[in-house]
Length: 100
Image 1 (cartoon, rainbow, N blue to C red):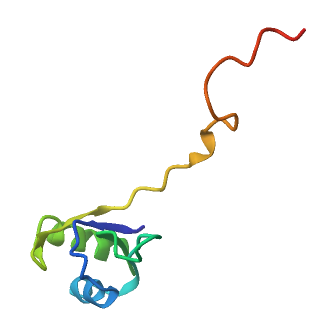
Image 2 (image 1 turned 180 degrees about the vertical axis):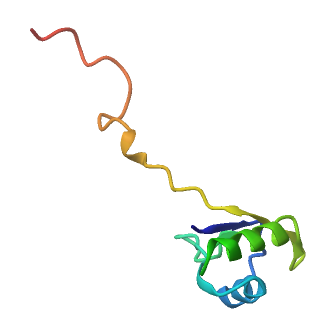
């Protein structure tokens, strides 16, 4: 399981987030995505902890808490949606009538 942490200050670092979540257990990993073009933090991140109980305690305590001047949004991360369901043909319009 992973925790989604949103509405973060753009000044947050992995060390800041690790410190905030360490009060609830062992932090295994912190990931802060950055914008490809600017390299700037995107305002959200993900935290993984040792146990689900630790993650649940962190979610309950930190969701809505003010931290670094913002109210954090903390919940269970949802799996990324698969974008492979899109048609490979692109644009709309008709492909012509029956060929048979």
